[in-house]
Every structure is written in structure tokens, then in C-alpha cells.
Amino acid sequence: MASLAQGTRSLGLGEPGAIEQTGLDLSFICDLTLKSIYFQSTATGQAISDQICLPYFNVVERALSQLKREEFVEINGSLGIGEMAYQYALTPKGVSRAHEILDRNSYVGPAPVTLDAFRDMVRLQSIKNTRVTPEDVRKAMHPLVITDEILDTVGEAVNTGGSVFLFGDPGNGKTVLAERITDLLGSVVLIPHCILVDGQIIKVLDLQNHQPVAPTTSRSDLDRRWVTCKRPTVIVGGELTLQSLDLVYDPSSGIYEAPLQMKAINGMLLIDDFGRQQVRPRDLLNRWIVPLEKRIDFLTLHTGKKIEIPFDELIVFSTNLKPQDLVDEAFLRRIQSKIRINNPTIDQYRQIFRQQCELLGVPFEQAGLVHLLREHYVKPKRELRSCHPRDILRTLVGIARYLGSTPSLSPELIDRACATYFVEF
Image (tube, rainbow, N blue to C red; front, side, top):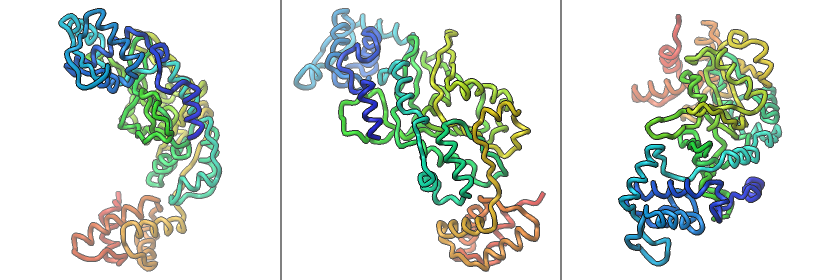
């Protein structure tokens, strides 16, 4: 994290000391200030500064001075001592001006950063800078039961910083494995609330996909337009469409929502259950060809203008289907790491079963496991799956509660659990 803090200083991510250091022009800050007062009815200089995340001195105060000269705002009181405590309200002329601005966009909140600042930060935090060792991988994946061969392949993929194709039968932990990969990419990153492109605001921070954490640097004067977050992990499944991979414009607010891959920048984008999306796999894969090769992506504003953004993230495709049924050789060549997740061996199944017994408070008995394997795997010729121990034991615990008995690996409880869990077609 020391390198990130050092990098933020080199990028000038201390709180801007003047309007010129924000990357924004005075008129934009004036408009944002006017909207802030409009929605608060009256607001102090401190309250405005807190809402738009810009310093009062030399930035907000200049905007307020300009608005006063234009007779858009006036001082109608004070809540304390000093300029920051002055209370501002809109004049009738200011209300009319606010309505004009709101007709263009209704955004009020932290001021945006510029696209150039966003690009610089993405480069600073690039996953290409990540280097992991075998020890790092095993620590991140503990206590998952995975072969050393797969663990080493995952580590190599992270160091490559490319893309990963996970495939194999369902229920063997592909999604869980992918989710752990983000921990290998590094600790935290800085994500902007929003960015300004060609006069348009694009919201980037999304609390459904971004997890803010307390800054690890002791500096108290960092630019508040950036939020310290864990490396993002964005997971999408069957709901993924081509439209969700481009900017989403809301005509009622005049604001854009960043697409999924932009929210996953400097982290990981997991496309789960690949091949079961509403869009054809080939169309979806064609959308990724340029970003995967060039490490840049192009997004389109509703005005028709295209913007270039970095494509710095680990893309993970996870599927239960055969790769050859989904993609052609040309696309597979662009995915640097292909990892098959096989069914567990008997020893791996036993290890997983023991772990789940401990987690669920079910006393482990070797005889119970032998009964389970013989009656419900060997005899019906059923394949082992890594998810089976967890699911069977959870069902067993529920049955024991229903019966008012203590969960155990008795043949009776195991048979009842398997009868409701396994389905014969």
C-alpha cells in the first residue's frame, strides 16, 4: 500500500489547492455548487464543500464569489464564526438558473475527476504490477481443496494479467475459485465517484460492486473525489447482455452509469455460467476481442462520440459447457489461461467432507462416510462433486432439526438426506 500512497502523491491526489488543480473549469463548479444549494434549500460553505468533495478555500469560495457577482446566491445568515459558516440561499434569479442546469443533468454529489486522471490512476494500480508466489496463492485459496497443478496455473495466470477460462462439470468450485483470485491482485485501489467526459458525467462508484475501506494512509488531505476500496470483483451470470457492456444513459437525469467492465477495472470481471446468457456466446466473445488484445475499450456517448478507456482487469469465463461448443480456436487463443476443474478424487472428497462436518457441527465418523460413498456413489455409479458434502450435510442437519435429534452420520440420516438431494432422471 505504500506504493499506492506514494503514487497518489505523484499524481497530485492531495486535495486540490486551486480550481486549476481539479481539472474542472469554474463554470462547472459553479453549476454543481448552485445545485447543491438548491437541493439543500440553504447551505453553508462547509456543507457545500462536504457534498461536492472539493475544498472550501480557493475552490468553493471562488465559485460562491462568482455566483454572488452574478446574483444567483446571497448570504442569509451564519451558523458560526468564519466564512465557511456563512449560510447561502438562491435568489429568484438563481432558482431559475438552477432549473436550467437541472434540465441538462440532475447530478448533485462529489465532483467528477477527469478522464485523464482516471486513466493515470488505472495505470498506477494496474493488475500488470501484480506479482504472486506459490505461497501467496496457497494462502489466498486456503482452505479450498484444490490440486497443486491448478493452484500453480492460477498463480501463473495472475502474474500474466490476462484472461482465464475455467471449465468443467458443475459443482466443483469454479465460481468459488474465481472469487478468491481477486485477493491475489492486491489490497486496495482508489475509485472515483464519477468522471467527466466531454461535459458528460459517468458514475463509476457502485456500492453493489465496490467495497469502501478505511484509507491505510495517514494523510487527511487526500482528494475526496476518490474512494479507497477493495479490489473490485464484479460477477455477472445469465442476465448479462451486450447493452450492459456499454454506457447506460438515463435521459431523465442526464447521467451515465458505467458499464460492468468499467466498474471492474483494476480488479476482476467474472462471467459466470458462460454460454447461458441471453446473448449468443459468439456475439459476446466478439465484444471482448479488441479489449483482450489491445487492453483498451471503447464506449459510446448518446451523442455518438466514442471514448477510450483502459481495460485493466482479469476477465474470467466460467462454464459447465464444453469450450469447443462455445468458442472457436481463434478466440481461445486470445484467452491466455485455460483451466479444467475436474471432479474431486476420493481423498479430496473425504477432506472436503471432514471440513464441512466441522463447519456444520456434525461429528465426523469414517463409517458414515463409507456408507455414503458405497450406497449413494458406488452402487448408482454417481460421480463425485466438490459441492456434494456441503449440500448433503446441510440437508442432513435440517432433517435432524425436524426430527428433534442430534445431527450425526447415521445411515438413516444420510439416506434421508440423499433421497431428497439426488434426483434420478
